[in-house]
Image 1 (cartoon, rainbow, N blue to C red):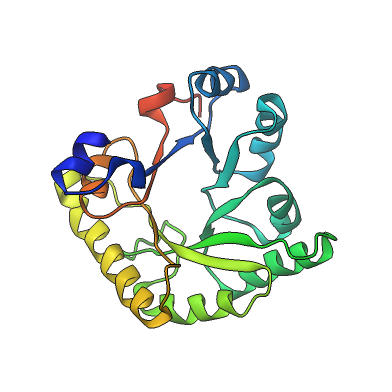
Image 2: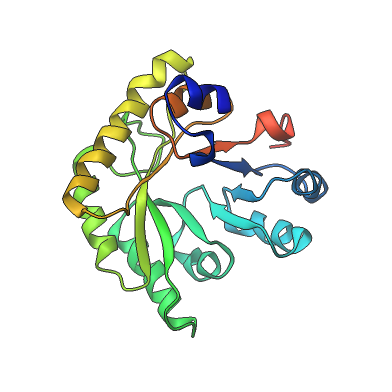
Length: 217
């Protein structure tokens, strides 16, 4: 990560490593935490809960997989960043869950999931739908629109570089309209392509296999 940041003239400290724990048992997660991993990401709310309890406090959990509306309450309770908002209805469900949680003033950072490549098998809003969705999230009193996320198609790192570049261009255009220092996050890049993602501007990379080895499922 540091080498990729230096190659692109960036400060390595500006890039957040999120350990993706899908299919990883709690013992391996605890070992990674003991080694210094502070940010943890899970694809499914239900799979995260025993790991969150096993690891204990002091670590930040990210929901990096698809958020089902019926899991909004649990997600709002256990996660500090949601990477996968892909519709106004999901955003509204999460906002309502936070409002009903009895924690006045609590706001949750969320990222808009963008299906840059238009893959039918993946979640996310298309590039043309990003701006309206950002506006819908911004209208939610308990949500903070923090930036964008994408899952790149299968292929070599150079093959997916244009996907990461396009996400950065989308973020930059929206950020110029929003103003201020917010809406800076770009969650993109996994074990096979995180270096290219960093070179193209990633502020968060979601690494599973390169940390934990092959997952169970």
